[in-house]
Image (cartoon, rainbow, N blue to C red; front, side, top):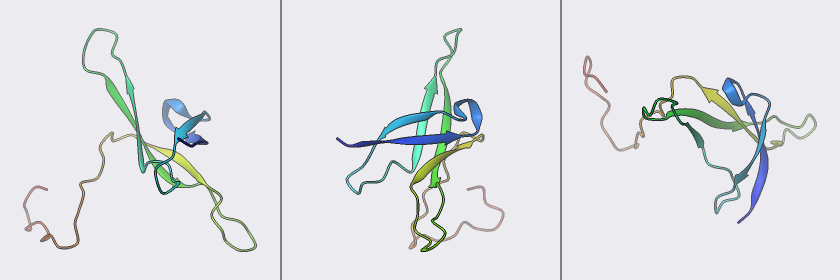
Length: 93
């Protein structure tokens, strides 16, 4: 499988570059999770990074690749399908 060096920004991985496996479309995964084991045997803490464009070229505005930004909340947004009803007002989603 192919991989590409991808930089990480923010959080404990700030400034590091890891080889990330690419999917069938040639893009790295949208979310990258890094489990960090707890020293006292508790469940591991999960660091969550989201894939964002690394930048754009000046002349043609082409994308220059991908990077991962840290998401301190540690939760992915809920998947929303276009055909689902919006949540009722006041209802917890």
